[in-house]
Image (tube, rainbow, N blue to C red; front, top):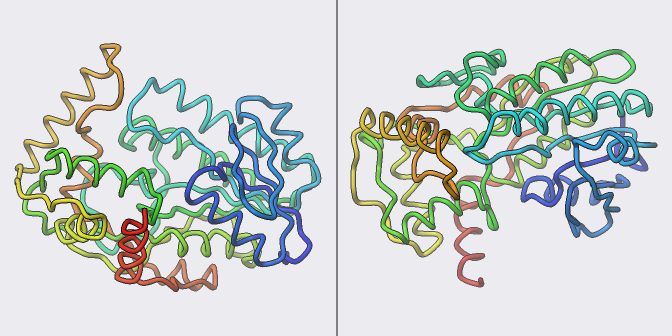
Length: 328
């Protein structure tokens, strides 16, 4: 399908990546509709407000759309698993059914490499199969189940492709950048282990371009999952220091052994699961694993399938982050 004149629904457009996808689609000639619980305020897009858990609202949002890019999800790092399942799995089920019934021809499921990560290092890895039973934490488990649900819906009538952007960041990011900077300023950002494992990330504009490319990718690449990254893995300590420098925050100085951090994160997971504590724990096992093991991916298959390549380098992205931080 082509974008020009097509109506594309973007769920979760009030978030950084969702908003970038909506703006990119509009700039490329699509009629953009967004669906989320609060206004997305994307120029040229029409907001439909509602929740993925409300099947009537979902049907209203998708009615008449040619394609869907599904980003909305519960992404908190802690919380009862049934809440993740209600949004990430059942919400995706509602959206797939409504998109199929309305005649949408393309469905892009925005997933995560965490759906195939079981705690070890990933070095030049492919997009392995989603593993709901092995993925770490309720977010990863439910996103894995949602990806399998989406890919199972691939058909000649509605082609489905899953895209897994890895560690998306940029100006305004509240996930990676926001957490790193807040903890650095509070003196609570240690380097776990040696800090040497290589980690790849994705600048937000590159991730948005890849998701838009998936809307128009050839039918023969559908029914599969693709990991998207900048393709520039860096040592985790170098990445943390660069984000802190760009944001005007102090660099991390304390080192904590990785095995200690993982054990502490697991213990805090258990405490937060048992007690009605506010906010999120200072560390989780999943975060400890992410910051103490390598995770970077072979991008050749993704770039060939989607006809996409990143246009913003890691260093240019850091320069943009620094400029945005200086003007804030």
